[in-house]
Length: 302
Length: 151
Image (cartoon, rainbow over all chains, first blue to last red; front, side, top):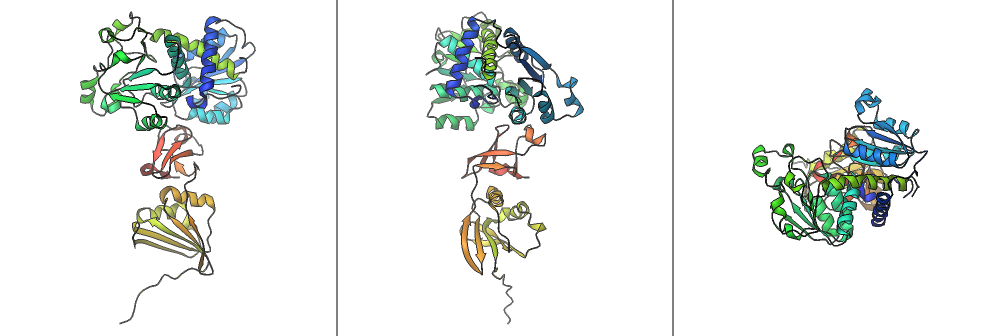
């Protein structure tokens, strides 16, 4: 994986996913190592983010690397009209690796073609966020002991949610059965269903969150956002139908875990937080180990 | 009574683009930038066609296309046929074929795509040819047949 870009989750193979997850477990066991000493890593956040940026910077610092970058493009020459092309050209002269988030879709792919150093995409608009996907997979592996043959329920905004799309692509390598639960306006796009058809995988679609939850190994929650609806009355009608409450989890498998990419607004009621099924905060912690694994393997240090 | 039929004569050397759906004929004209050619060009449109209902045809004297131009036509007129003419005879028939990759011809449908916001040559993987679907190499969104805009 040395010098490879991670722009899209499909840039990595099944073997590479497993290698990253294995390394992440190693870093979880030994989170303080000096293997990135002497490396300068640039974190370019053209769009604000708390969790992702801090998680990357924690991972880099814990491994002894140095971070340069910005967390808001307002204070950079992008605000003077510098193109992404030029910013990346310049920064790739300074750093050994660039982690970037940008509001425009495809920006990370363009950067990877312009840059002389590897690019790790930390989110390009609504398109891809592959390190999130890998940390989701790590969370699934850790809690289920395997990635193979699981039943994953995806709930909420399945139309625009980039995390569910990437997770679907990656988990389709592991004979997953998917359940898509969403309001009609926010159904899983047909292109992704076609993707599963081509792989011969089974999926079920429903608009009822209470159905079949007892079969789930993973419930992956996402937020139903008002601005996604063309009809505000439709939003009012469905907004409470996709909120997970603790009493809905009765009868679920003991090992079932609820995941959420965060930030949560109200789609998981706080009464779930104390449940043994709640895993979303641990999931965020896993992000640091997964990012350690990604950066150190791309820099050829692991 | 005199026969006043105006005959469009056959060309001696050149290319005939046939089986262009009537609705896209002028798109083909603009894609190929024919307005800027000095060569003799005959354009017919809305001619009866058993296959297409109404078709268009373009005859170009002394014009022979490169593959990359033919690819451009394929995006809007995938069933177009080219007849290469030498000495009034059809010496070669070519079907236009949509390539697996389209570079710098079409525009991505996604307004938030980097290619619509910075100077970047567009690039698409052709994920479906029967009903054309282009997947943007950058933003990964699909541009389908009805939304294809030629640059």
